[in-house]
Length: 198
Ligand code: ADP
Image 1 (cartoon, protein in one colour):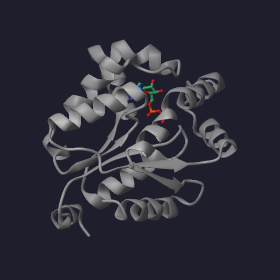
Image 2 (tube, helix red, strand yellow):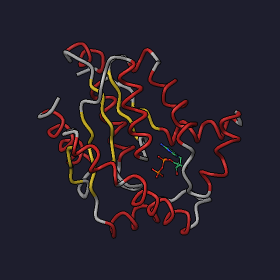
Image 3 (cartoon, rainbow, N blue to C red):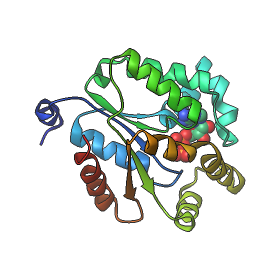
Image 4 (cartoon, helix red, strand yellow):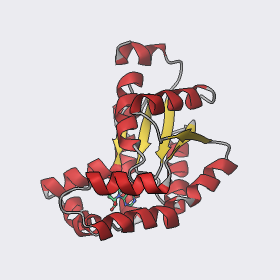
């Protein structure tokens, strides 16, 4: 079905977060589902990378942090995401990829959505065994990423982002999907997991 038709067929907006470590395939799944459901995939990593490429003020601020595999501060990220969620195309829902990454960001997102009179419909955790993650991230790493930077991203995920699993479990929003299979099988898994809840 064409994206427009699917959106029309969807009774209400679908606000989803995709959660998972670097290499879990969030970005790939967000792209596929965005086309299928006619809602935007919002990737904070892509947004920041294009800011760096364009040399904007934001790009100059975050360039070296990203290159080192660090996390951009919560305040800056809140501004980036708030503006993006106010776009018309996000009125019918969205797939957030790369945000929230910390507990503070999760609280901020909740407040942001509350102010727009909406809330998350679900959070999909794409689970992949650690050995497979390391294999994937090392093989696809960008030219300028050292192994050390890749490992730092994984470590920061465990430290700062993994606590979101419990956070969203408590809110009964978490859906876990096995990401250690073919791309299409993961997409089907997400559709199934979300279909039950949204
Ligand atoms: P990954 O390669 O881990 O999938 P992304 O493409 O999502 O990473 O993001 C790349 C980089 O952008 C991160 O390593 C981080 O420096 C920055 N970044 C993206 N989203 C956030 C966020 N929500 N909070 C802090 N930093 C972020």
